[in-house]
Each structure stands twice: as C-alpha cells, then as structure tokens.
Amino acid sequence: MGIELPEVETLRRDLEREFVGKKIKGVELTSMAMVPTCKTRKAFCGPLEGRKVTGVRRVGLVLVVELDGDHVLALRLGPKSRLVRAQPKDDAADGTEVVVSFTQGPQLRVADPGPQRGELALVAPADLLTALPDLARLGIDPVEEPMSWTRFGELLYARSTPLKTFLTDPTVLVGVGDVYADEILFAAGLRHDRRSDSLSTQEIRRLYRSLVETLHDAMKHRGTSAREGGWTDLFGKPGQYDEHLAVHGREGELSPRSRAPIKRVKFNGTWTYYCDTQT
Image (cartoon, rainbow, N blue to C red; front, side, top):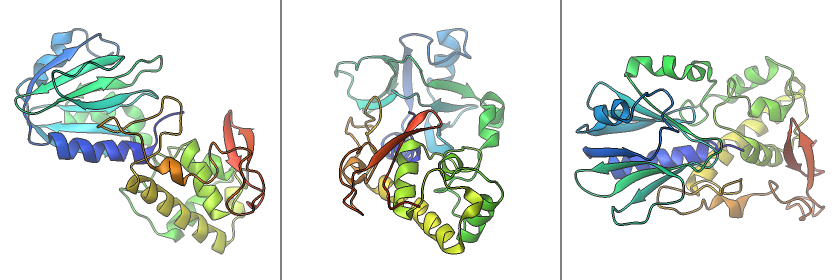
C-alpha cells in the first residue's frame, strides 16, 4: 500500500519550509539502490554539491526539488520511504540510503529499507517526463488543479467502472489510494463497486464534495500512518488523521453512521472497508 497524496503534500510543504534557500555542501550515498539511473556515486553527488535549493514542487506523487543549476532532483517514495530532518550528530535511521548536508542547518536524510524502494533521479528540468514517463499520463490533481463538480461528473460518465477503481486510477485522479478511497466513499454514502456512470446528479455532487473535503482534512491533520510501514513526516511524527478514519482499518467496529459493524472485503486484490449504509 503506497503513500498517498496528503502525505506527499505534507512532506513537500515541510521540505519547502525547511530547505529552500539552503546550499548543498555534500551528498553521501550508502548504496546505489535508490539511484538506478546513475552508474557511479560521483555522477549523482557531484552535480548536487554547491547547488542552492530554490523550490520544492509535486508532480503527482513525485517530489521535485528545484536547484539553481542545470538539474532538478526528483524523488519517488517507496512504501517504506522516510524523509528525515536530522542533525549531523543524530544516529542514522535503519535503511538510511542518502544523506544531504547543507552549509548551515540540519541534514536531509532519505531512509528506505525496501524491499520496494523509492527512486531518486537527477535530471535536466526538460527531461523530467522522459526520465519518469508515467508522469505524462497522470490525471487531474485534485489539490493542485481544482475542478468543478460538473467536470468531475463528466469524468465519471466517461467510463463505466467501479467507483473505487475510478478513484484510485492515477490516469484519472492523482494520489488517491486504498485509505482515502474508502473514506471518500463512506462520506459520500456510496459503495466501492457501484458503477461510475450510474450516479445521479445529487450523488455526483456528494462524491465530489467528499473527495475535496477528505483530502483537505487529511492534509490539515498531516496525513495518516494507517498503512504498512507507518508513514511519518519530516520530523519523525506520525500523521494525525488516523484518529479521523471512519472505516478504513476498522473492520468489526461499529459504523459511526449506522452502529452496525464495519465490513471488509477483498476488491481488486486489496482490502476495502465499508458499511451497509453505502449504496
């Protein structure tokens, strides 16, 4: 189960606040596991030394660190990846792969024990989509590209697919995975296997509102750690949205809507959580 949009956006904001304007002093690689496109350590570390961080943006679930030189640093997080703000004297976390030191202030460390590792790519800005071609196929980013509910309805009616499949398809919507899809559908009162082209106008508006509100609430509470590996933010703290999850991971607990037990079913190879009030 991968990291979803609220967690990546939380990291983006933290990185922007902590490291923009800082100059890179040096970069250390424990191994080459996260930089598969580089043949040597020098090929990756050399171009970064002396560069100043000018911005941090997000393209889908990829973090793009902008620099004042000829490259950008793109980071795709793995299921267990951690970005850590640390002092040089701090012990290294298990699986630390990359350490970025700056001329002043704390280090940025990337820990990833695997086995499904994240990936770092150092590329020219114009080559980003060539290096990571799946980014060119991304759908609408519901945080960066606000859309109207009518546009959302057009996307729903353009295909006949189960609603959870629709929500978690990155070529339709960016960054929604199992956790937030379950919460969005519960808030909207809709089943995961309902066909996307079967919704009434009222149901479309309800689902749209649920999508927007759930993602923004999750970002306000700095994400959720209710997944394998237990995601943490740049400061090592878990997300606080776990306390607000209504159904995901709560099989057998009483539904906050009906007081009947929350159910769990295998859907498209992963667990889906819902209650009987969803139609």
